[in-house]
Length: 90
Image 1: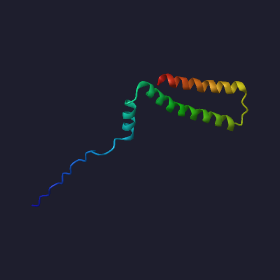
Image 2: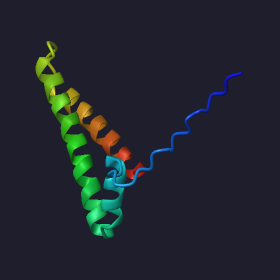
Image 3: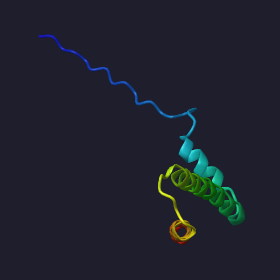
Image 4: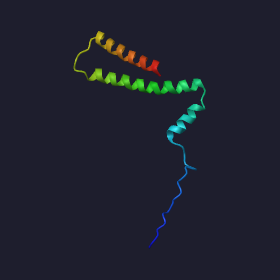
């Protein structure tokens, strides 16, 4: 009869390993005061809003339909309303 012994490999410990990127971001934000946290959030939201406005500009520019000022205003108003609602929720 032959007996085999299983190799019990020790589990690797994350010693010396950097924390995840998300953990690093959270740690950095946790060390900030409230004003700095709001500034970071507004900066992130500004990038998002800028992208939405660029998309709208491109949509209007590539449209074969001629839009009158009233239709453009309603489109801009709807977009601003959506952005405002997102701002309130966050």
